[in-house]
Length: 375
Image 1 (cartoon, rainbow, N blue to C red):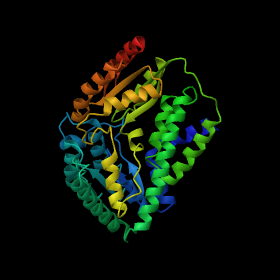
Image 2: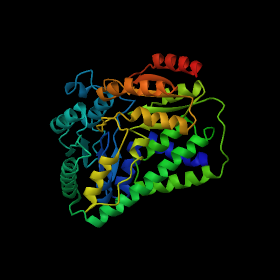
Image 3: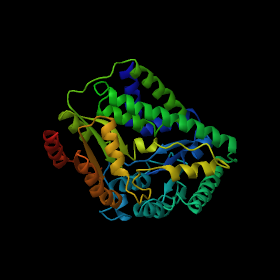
Image 4: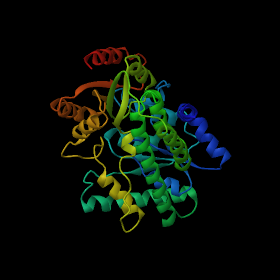
């Protein structure tokens, strides 16, 4: 039963366009692309549309996007632009781009100029996010997103609809957090690839359906006794680490991921939308206020390393890996502080640089092999 559920997640994660097109055609849904790193999915869901995570691609040659970005742009941004320009995303009724980095801000303007058939909805997330003025600003931004989605929908999105979506998403977040813990206590049953596709599949199907699948998976895992992994256990951090080749390299060296603070994975689910607030948009703004250890959320106290150290202790990890996205200033600034914090507490660490257009990760393989020997 568990393997069947994991297989379902894999089929969805590895065939995203087919999955999304099936929902559009068979269920008469509109789909809205959610460009990383974070976005107001609840508003899309409340509008009766499908939020689709757009995190680039490992199986694409960059050609058209070179007219819009220099070679030293982050590979995921290049891939997203390429897929927009070559028609892969034509089934979408719009995309939401969050202005969290210089590359994403540039993407929004390049998208507006180059991909005219897919409407752009831009949202600026404030870095002064814990101040009342920052939350008020974000509430206005969310209001603008809501209005643009209403134009695509053709009718108003009611407050009750948003509240229902907030409740659904909070329930889904809780289920994903539970899966994360269960996977760490059953490392022989859930390998690195399988753990990855469970997270990734959530980007391509309605959250209500994914929630049902995850609940089943969690119940089956809870029936099993806790497992002792014969290899080494690690936690990982960064923006993303879903490259199947790298996950397989970890497997080859007996290294199992038992926890993460990856933006693409657990960071999406760590912080619920709070219940208190004068309306749904204020509640969603408070979620951005509350999130911690997130690459693109201003953190003067640099908690990311301390949070990873706590996760290492909680999951009984032997070490930790920082997966830095090539040409990502955010990652490059955080990485030395993160490594220093973990090393000061006695944890073994490794940093690797990931790139979606890297066809030959031999350097990463060598570094992981050396790290496995240290562990």
